[in-house]
Image (cartoon, rainbow, N blue to C red; front, side, top):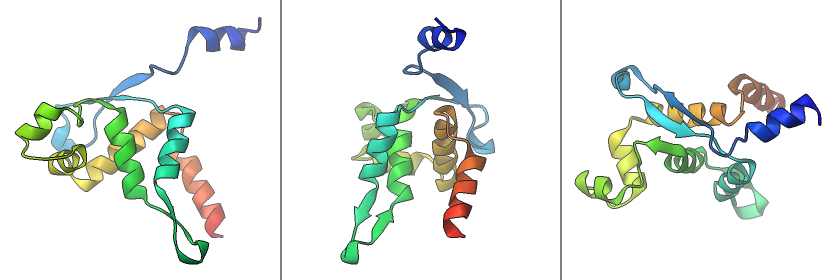
Amino acid sequence: MSALLQFLIENPVDNLTAKVVVSPRLAKFPFKIKGMTGPEFSLYQKLSTKIGGKKKVEFDSKVFNELVVLNHTIEPNFRDAESIKKAGCQTPEQFLYKSLLAGEISELAQQISSLSGFDKEFEDEVEEAKNS
């Protein structure tokens, strides 16, 4: 068995977690996040993509970021029914937007993506290449 294969077997990615800080406002309160699997990433992309008139494809990054943050933030748990109710909200999405600034949500989604193996610089290069 190769050393790489042995490493991969001994280090599964299904429970990869990290603590991250998303903004100066929350510097004393690190978030605990977990990585996305390939199938989860594909599902979120599918749920965030709409095909409109004339088969125009639109990707909704707001929906994508919501899915990533809501499903991969361990602490705080934005899906906790008791916390949602205490915050005066009806849904996890409402609780998320009542608790965090837009930039904090974006940063949290980016850090989850980074933990999941997506390099921001590489993604930026891909976008630039698409737009060229």
